[in-house]
Amino acid sequence: MDSCLAQMNYAVLKAPLDSPHLADFASALDHVNALAEQSPGFIWRLQDDAGDATAMRPLGENTLINMSVWRDLASLRSYVYESGHVQYLRRRRDWFEQTGERQLVLWWLPPGHIPTIEEALEKLALLRAQGPTAAAFTFVAQYPPP
Image (cartoon, rainbow, N blue to C red):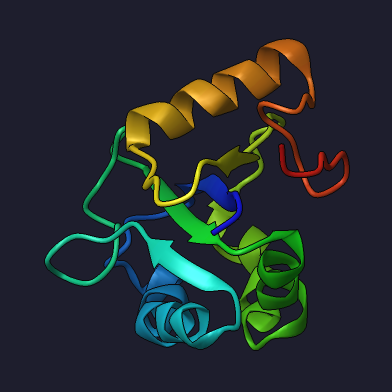
C-alpha cells in the first residue's frame, strides 16, 4: 500500500452540543460519519465507544475535533465537497465560531499508520508556524505523497 492521507480539523462550538442551537448538527453526526465510511478511499476515522469523537476535547471543552485517514487527496476532496457532506459544510458558520486560524491540516502517513491526536496537533502547530510544507499542508496548498 502507498502512503495514505490524514486530515484533522477542529471547530469551536457556538453553543453546547446538546443545545437546541446545535440540534441539526448533532442529529446529523451519525449520517455524516456513515457517509464518510461508505465513501471510496475512506480508511479510518477517530471515534470513541459512542461512535464519534465529540467527547474527545483536547483543544478545550467548546472545541470538537475530527480526524480521518484516506487513500488519497482525491478521495477526501470528493467526500468533503461532492458528497452529502457538503450540505452540512455549508452550514458550519451557523454552528461554529470563526477563529481566524487554520483549523484543518493534511499530511501523508506511511502505510498502515494510524495517527494519534497528539500527532495531529503537532501537524497543525507546524502548519501554523511554517505555512504549508510537505509535512503539513492544506487543500489549497497541496503536496504529493512522498
